[in-house]
Length: 121
Image 1 (cartoon, rainbow, N blue to C red):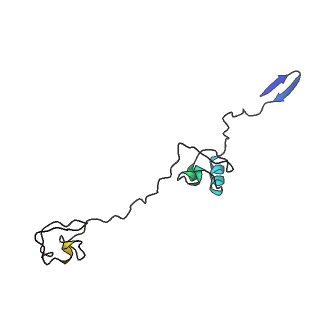
Image 2: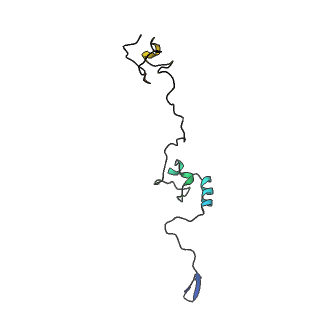
Image 3: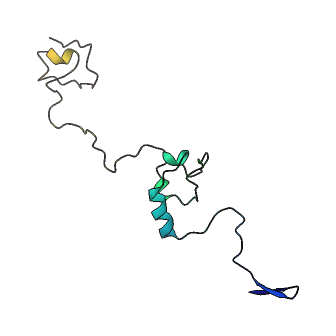
């Protein structure tokens, strides 16, 4: 666009961005972000690699609404399930560990062990 000012013609450049954010291509930004080490919250944020905030590596980020530092949990964590078989184990806690009736016992065994039982022998 040409603009005439006092007898001369000047070419206007692209509009200035007042917010302080710069426009970058997504590819260039992701390539540069993977090589940088950021300060502040970004150094421990889980979303740092996918962050869209334009950051300066020399200045720490002290507040971010997207900050996430929660521990990452694997998709299928291995959790112990109920064991199949009779209601006793070889290593029972409490009185059941050395009770003579533990093999034929019909009472439920708690994980913390049974510490009082009228049938104990």
